[in-house]
Length: 328
Image 1 (spheres, rainbow, N blue to C red):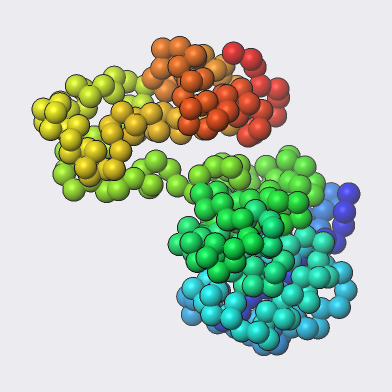
Image 2 (image 1 turned 180 degrees about the vertical axis):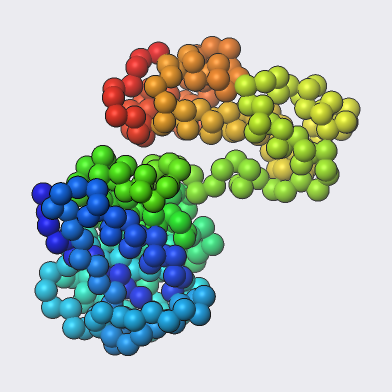
């Protein structure tokens, strides 16, 4: 078991404080999760001087990037609204690249992917970042393979996360990679994290991805669907709930949300199914009935069509239960 694993957090003026605080607390929590587990945490700025975060909080540095001369186990570049600006600072990028060459494992939190990509260290790697900068990332760095709809991406020794709180997911995954999933689970419990999300999950739930309905009846139905996923979600029932005719409801829903009501219901049920497969030992048949499908085969078809995998395969890849998953 590795001891005194060194993690360097690369900061600069304008970084988002939570991009540092979340992962830092995860690594600090590791010492409570198992004997002889220790992470040495270092904050590095380009010149070793204090910086000011995007929220106005001053942050002291432990060292400068140029002063790092010994091997680094993990280097994480933090994100923030000034990430694009710092990625165009040649002095910073050169110093960061030198530090990267000393590191066994490289990564970024949120928009920290942009300055890390500017070093060339992410060329030909799959990465993710905050949804708001993924288009910029792909445009500026065409050799980087951007996966915009991920919580975090692990490609060989490169680890990148989506925005803000996704840095906690990334750090938990890194600790799990170092010391096993039980240690990561223990830290998550200490931090009162509701669930440790797998990297393959979307950055957004169906509700966050969908457009906000202008019509109050449609908005009401959206919330009602989420609360009654196992119930009758036919167009007839939903139209009655919205106090519209079926034809008017179907037309307005598609116009305001961007997809049909049937597609929306299927997405919500799929999302609920994924959560159950990740966190429970329910059989596939039971999961299907819990989310409103009569048969497991229906759920199977939805998974194949929308995720190009089966419920069983999804569970094997993402399940967080300690025991083996039951077959359907």
